Image 1 (cartoon, helix red, strand yellow):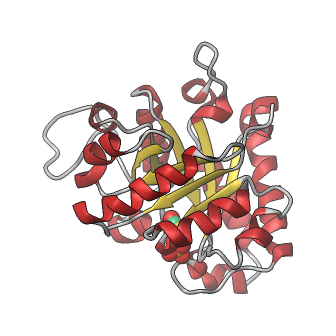
Image 2 (cartoon, helix red, strand yellow):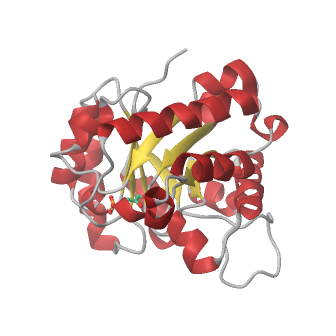
Length: 255
Ligand code: G3P
């Protein structure tokens, strides 16, 4: 089984109701395409409105709490995201790991909570510039992935829904996020191959279909090269996902 390329926009802490016009334009354009799966992860405040506004694209959260409900002021559970109309959630983004001290173990627990709530999950990993410079990138990111992935039991198939439809991984080098810098094609290919090995080690055969997205300064000019790199199953896009024109330039390169 091989799924379509998956292109996801992460709006981060950007976007107000007016920004939904971009999402509507993206949705209309995606409705005319086949062979690519598209999602947008707006801030929590826009999830329900985005769900109402679109039909051809998935809607996601950018984080969730590990508990289903309770005394956790300011947090949102995976069940609440699902209730607001989300299909998926991003966990372990490097900005969450850095701003909120999220550990691999916490990221794993969030991924498992999300799957239990019926959401699909994108687990993010990536090395810092110092780790890349010291030649440790593959070892660091492989360890991060091993410790952040949901258990085989939590991630297993549910009915007819395969593992690869419930789980994706995003490789986002921290130094490439929002900087306009991207790794070489050879480095992207090598990292994606290393992550594929970890997925197969974790899940067996099912791990070979899980899409590994690339994220970090993807734009309409570099998307075709990045998306055609062996092992790259799609893109996780930050800044360029805020405008329909630039995001669709990337989506078109994936299709
Ligand atoms: O999750 C997407 C991301 O961190 C990349 O952001 O702005 O470099 O595309 P950007």
